[in-house]
Amino acid sequence: MTAPRVDVIDHLAGEGSGGEIARLRSLRPQARDQAQRSYEVLLEPEDPGTVPVRERYAIAAHVARLHGPGPAAELYLENLRDEDPVLAKRIGAGERTGEPHLDAGLAHADMLVQRPRDAAPDHLRALEAAGWDADGIVTLSQLISFLTFQLRVAHGLRVLAENPAPALREPGETR
Image (cartoon, rainbow, N blue to C red):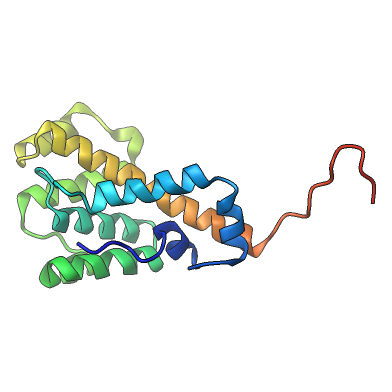
């Protein structure tokens, strides 16, 4: 597990330092720090518990692929490749792994990303049947939710950076 050299959302938004994205993110430093900390806790935890890091990166790469090609899919596949090159190849090709535990996690990701309103107790029972415990299911669901948030923030920052808003006027100011 290697610590990222740059804030991950900055990287996914296409900016390592400086510029409009950095300016926008500097307006909310606590949100920036908490998002980065969430990445570290969910994807590179000191104690991964029942969800190994390779599975976390496999889920992350899969969720990123579901959102479309781009820097997130590349980043998470690269991180997975460092953990397990064979698994990275399968996930990159959109294939299931043949590992019941991980495949159930991938199916859960499909459902939460593509059909969240269809979530039902049967889905949780399917995870349990594949060996997921309660803590693992919570971690998995948090990971999927965080990744969706992260990808949307990065996309929004790219849009804002490409289309900056005009400067706001102070009340009573005329130009």
